[in-house]
Image (cartoon, rainbow, N blue to C red; front, top):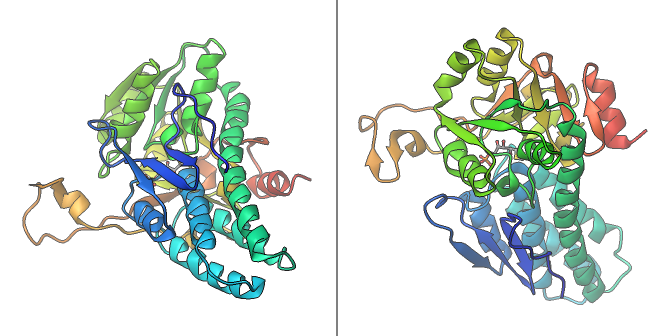
Length: 355
Ligand code: MRU
């Protein structure tokens, strides 16, 4: 039975070990470090929906593992029947969160494996799907490390980097995208410090980015979201690096709500605005960012903090979880296959299709 590598120094929010998976419950960080065990695809779907696991690449990895759980439990000898049942499993996982394309990317890859191997026995398909899920996990970590190597060249020694949300190890199989660039620069011997936006309302910056950087002794200072402009105006920020949930063919970037605001601030202050993402986050099927589905979450995330009520009973609330930053505000997109800037339409197409 396959496993993911175990190295206690590396933060890996998803462990895929001996037919089950454990996930670090990110809703409880930084106060409690609780690992939960999952054995069925329905349980994994619920973990994605309720944000036990979150971050675009991490939910892709979780969905692939969930899909394998579903596949393993299908009882039939017919490969065609197996495929039909497997599609239903994938549909349940796909319905959990709409914005991050990594989810559908991973599920499409699992379905494609099945569809293109229908001449094999059901047992062979199940074994193959387990390997596919493991490969998706391992390839994500590798992509982030490569992306980090490309991206760290953009960071000067002493750089003070603003980041929004958590695009770190916790949002991926390991290492992170935006924080992967920072980790790679630190590993290259540069002194990098991070300013982390708290990221209302789910507080991925305050709870998760702050937690993982502090754990690795990378200097990090926490600010409220509305403080970024002030710090930029005082010359206390050198560049912005964020992750992405989906990048359209023209380079428009969907990421955590508030990213667009930060990009405008960066433009106003002539600061580079970098997006770090693996190619599994690029969706060439969408011509521009207006076509990206934006998740709207429960208003209670805004009116309450845990059980504490912050706003009047019955108040009308909007809670879009993501926004879209137009490509004209993006200085460069850093992927595992290199850096794209300028003509995103051509550059992203070349990188995804590697021509
Ligand atoms: O709602 P979340 O926490 O899943 O949103 C996460 C983000 O927006 C991240 O910035 C994005 O997924 C990139 S993670 C490498």
